Image (cartoon, rainbow over all chains, first blue to last red; front, side, top):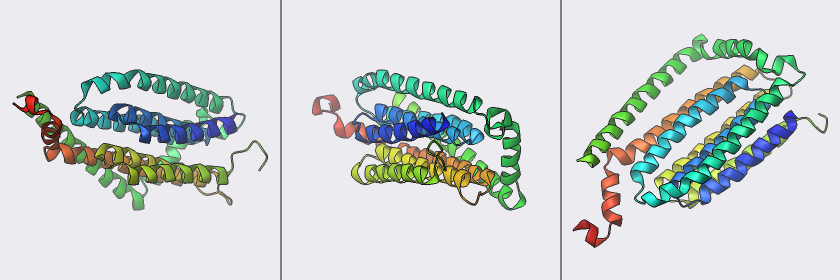
Length: 166
Length: 108
């Protein structure tokens, strides 16, 4: 089951990436990209990387929202936006269904150390690696940079929206 | 490795395929947003390769290390997307782009 989920996720990611890059409409391209990244998260989950898969889903969802905002700001054709939505809904539905299947596959797996019940231990191991003395300062610095950059983007976005409203 | 086990070579092949698709998109598309999309796909390929290598390597590596590195790359991908979005917004390309594509009647 895990084998099938991994291959399904990877093949779906490749196909969705090709579709995303061949779309002309920016909105549907970003939505297909979201599908690609969710399919990749499914593959990570099938490999047993539970924490990473969760972070991938959350962060990539945020990244797609940022890109969608950019598409909204940079797009001139409003009709295209409304055309892109139904396709995006279908992709999101497929991605959620795949993700659900992957969670089930990990849950029913006979290997106890790879199942979801091992997630707290997994988080502990990950934190031990991330916040070790050598890497801890790097992670904190990266988080600070991320916060500063996202804040700057938010301010610029608000300024641009105010300017266009005037 | 039995027939129904995930192999490291399979995962590497998928990562190479995804990386090639992203690279082709990066070279073929000229719009900034589509290039950002391509870069996100490249990051996805790297993450897949990192996770699969750390999980399926022989002799076994530390899986948490691969996940930690993948998490850091994930954050870097998000920062890249944010910076990529910030540049056109900051330089006021939105207004220019709208002006460039609007018809003469609209401009009047």
